[in-house]
Length: 377
Ligand SMILES: Cc1cn([C@H]2C[C@H](O)[C@@H](COP(=O)(O)OP(=O)(O)OP(=O)(O)O)O2)c(=O)[nH]c1=O
Image (tube, rainbow, N blue to C red):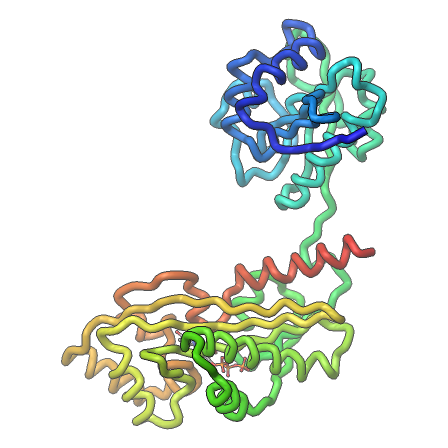
């Protein structure tokens, strides 16, 4: 028996309505308009099942903010929130001649998996008393009688809370291989539980090698390879000494007119860099490498930054900024989080990539690795 689950589309509407009417009494069955509205509103959580190419069942539900479905959720489309916390189940239908073949189970499991993947906190539905044991098999827990009077029946709230997979809950050692206080601050938005160990590598030698080996590819590709390699090298040094830990390395460079601007070597160099950046658009590239056991996630993020034209006021500000010593530990000789903010006319991309750590991408990569490890267990 060939069973296939896929997302529903509007062409399925008539078949869906026929199945809905065979599964529910008239007072409880969703109308054609309602099914059509749901299809358009939350296609991500409207799944159908086909057996040998014939549509025989479906499951659907809005994504809502609270763990319990209220009657208003069925009628008020505006209560669907694509970023909401709970996947609800408005209906689970299988046509009568395809029951007792595990098809409803497959549908519900697919919706639970999709909700987990989407990072929801859980899944919630209302059912009649006799269906409680059925849903308990999926881990849903009876929270008592529902306030719903849908179809004048008595309903029960059933809720499945997904396990918290935040990093804090895991027995995991994370090490940030960086001396940069800004990287620590940004990583702490994703997890509070990490150590810092500084990796000492010969950045200049790696840069010279990669630039010397560069072929005909675009300069930005070479620069991307450079920040990824430096990030991986930093992580690798620390990972070598801490085999069980998840180690994160990172590196940032500024790319202007096919030239790489790293940290300035002295005040004159810092001044020259800032003078060259004025009136132009450059790229800030930050590479990140996460090493954990045999696993690796290495990537780079690019943000374009434009500076206002050079004028007398900027000249005075740049001189004072250089004299303060602040440019010396920063790629391109500036920190957008400091006085240099006054010279920036616009950015295109992620702000934190400029500050040296694209924390949103890092957070996602960490959780991808954790999910991967859990499914392998
Ligand atoms: C462009 C720019 C860079 N920077 C910083 C980010 C990085 O810390 C620094 C680039 O130097 P990196 O060599 O990438 O990093 P680092 O030496 O500070 O730390 P480690 O190698 O130990 O990880 O420039 C800002 O803080 N703001 C900015 O606007």
